[in-house]
Length: 308
Length: 102
View 1 (cartoon, chains in turn yellow, brown):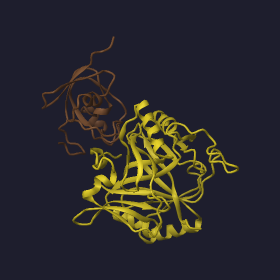
View 2 (cartoon, chains in turn green, cyan):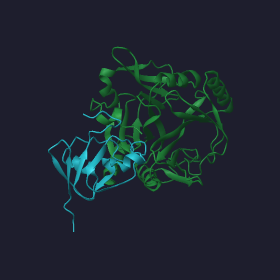
View 3 (cartoon, chains in turn cyan, blue):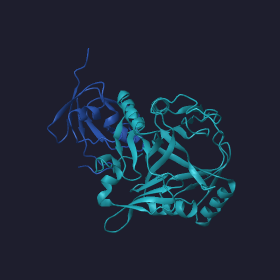
View 4 (cartoon, chains in turn brown, red):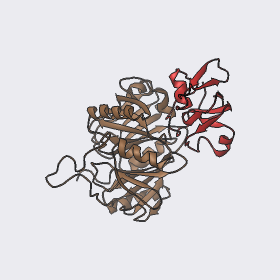
């Protein structure tokens, strides 16, 4: 098997200011399925093309942002290996018992040098509403809203992105597909990590404050789906950041917009297929406009400053 | 009867903007192309449009406590995107915040 170890981004837990508004946003506008609400108030959702039970968790809080991003791992042997290596590198690893989230097996949890909490787990129950497997139709449930296929990746902001890069590369087996570097010093300003065939599964931007969320991204089918998503954003007066446009980095097509708590979302399509033998793609900071927004060729005011 | 709106002035600026009763201060300013108060997420989460109200009545929606603490709220700090004028207002953007002011 080619892909082993860390398989993909599995779930994120997002802090929201108002649960009722957030459910309308994620369920009706982005088009996720409601999985359930638990006694602690957390709301679980999934995209229609995901097999696993849930991928998006909303937690009501008086401060927006990201609680945790979790990756699914192929088997327990890898999970044990990661735990040992993380501890060996001096990270505090917390064990989270199976069942802390419904349908999810044991997790290990650590705080990355950029101040983001990451969880790793092997088991999650399959959803009854996942993709069909027997003479499968394209979808079991009728796609709704922006027709998000899956939770795709996150872009996170923090200080020591070199440190977090090292953890993901050296311990968790990720590769770096692209970087943005300072023209003069070569210091990495932004980097794009992949554990798969995707151009990125996790992206990091250097920022003065740790633990920040830039966006949670959802895959949609194609460029036309982005047009339809943009129609929905105007129809329902959703706060839009930029797009439809394209990223130079990953070559993905994109719209950035905000959930009702100010957490940035993305609908994303395309992007090249990555293989671990691909050479690193490098952008000079002087070309960062084109790297981030390929058509505008310049950053907007919000790209570097607006995070939760 | 449709309210004609409220007059919003920014301290240190001679421009006065009319803000409708059914829209946020930030939306009102944006309609006039005002850039004194920058727009971020427009949802009360990022804190970029933080201002202080010097005069006037207003209501607020939900805002991230990271950007407007309870004490700051008492001192009339607020986020323009979640501030809804209830009278004419005077605001200032030259406050100590978590972004560089132009």
